[in-house]
Image (tube, rainbow, N blue to C red; front, side, top):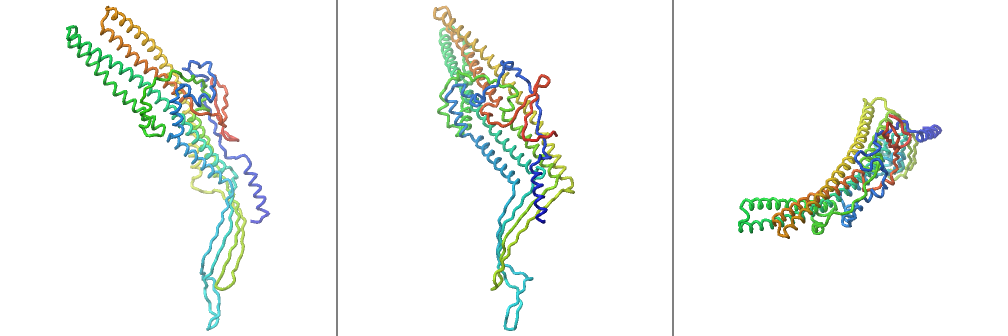
Amino acid sequence: MNNRYLTPLTILSLVWLNACTPTRVGDQVALNSPTSWQHAAHAKTAQTTEAVDLKIWWQGFNDPLLNELIDKALAANHDLKIATARVREANAMVTVAEAALYPSLDFSVSGGQEKRIDRIVGVPSGQGIKLITPTADAVSGGLAARWEIDLFGGRHLEAEAAAAQAEGTKEGLHAAQVGLLAQVATNYLELRGVQQRTDILQKNIALQRERLRTLQVFLKAGLANEADMARQQTLLQRTEATLPELTNAEQNLIHRLGVLLGEPPESLEKRLAVASPLPKQMPTMPKLLPADLLAQRPDLRLAQTEVSAAAASLGSARADLYPKLVLSASGGVGALAVGGFPSLAESVYALGSGLSAPIFNAGRIRAHIAAADARLDQVAANYELTFLLALEDVENAFVAHRSATDSFGQLTEAEASAEKAYRLVDALYQRGAGDYLAVLDAQRSKLAVSDERAKAETAVSVAMVSLYRAFGGGWTSASSDRVVSIKPRYGNQRLTRSHGKHLEKR
């Protein structure tokens, strides 16, 4: 193509390149959010908690060993390592996609011997001039450049889709971290609860053995019968049968913590087998609003990146309907040496452009667009569903925490009453006005209530962990560049999360 036509065409292409992409598709999804939580005690006075509180929520238990275990898990957990590698992979694919926006420049060189039938040379000989086809040494090299002008934004949208997918892998890493922290804390708290219950059970077993010995003495004195002995023996054996179950649960929890910390299952057995009480201090109740979940929960952020990627992919598919313009340039030098003749060298160059547009493809492009559009509908619906599930998750966590707290309070009072009853019966026995078996029974009743109270106390701590997990605690969203706009509508809130620029309605 003549240069006088090439330059204006190039300028026109660049103008198109910088213009608003006509195939861009909007990625806005409207979500209806309640203004407060139904089952939270602070629902009417909720205010957003500082991000740093959510990031290090487990420190609210004030347990140095728990803090140490979580630090080790963050450094060595294999799920986090896998998620981190996925982030690196996705970032590399962004570079691959963005590279298509720029010209490519290739260098090539070739050489060798060739013998062509159309190349005949006459050489002197004894019989005159002899015609031969000589072997020639040929070498050539040069540069070739190619640039597909992104007239309708298809390449840019492909790069945007790759960037959104890379952002999604980061949210996947955040989700893995949130889940890891909750698992470590939950298993640790359950372990301490099991150990506390084991201690209570061992006291109960010792007490029932004492009662059995007492009945044996009474039997010899004629103050008890064989039926009393049999009933006590049965109760003792049933109580002792519970001990292996708690021991098994303790070992399983220790092994799970070892794996979460990226170590062999038995690596923590010696250290964690030493019983320790549940933390007495609790983290502050999180006070996020439902709208805050969009910025804090990684699964919601991941669902939004899927919408952005699908919208960009749909725009890229639509761009295939439009013409494509390619600019090319090449230049190089070649040399040819035949027999003993001097080498012949020449330089060549070429400038060109090409325009292609689809005419007939048996509906392939339209089908691709329809598939991309269906994909966008899928991820948009998934985003809405994920938000509803997140609301359900938080509400369930609030209900579980309130239920566990109420049970713990009632069982604490019951334990105090059982303790009082035991002391009264023991005082009567000390004054000679009571039965020793009644003292043992009162103490056994108190231990049974203590076991229930220990289970409820563990449930309260685990419920608090579940609440922070439901809110996406364990990382900070301070660096997020997404925008969350909230507009009142019919007493609720209409949430719109925007990504990209020059968004158009679908």
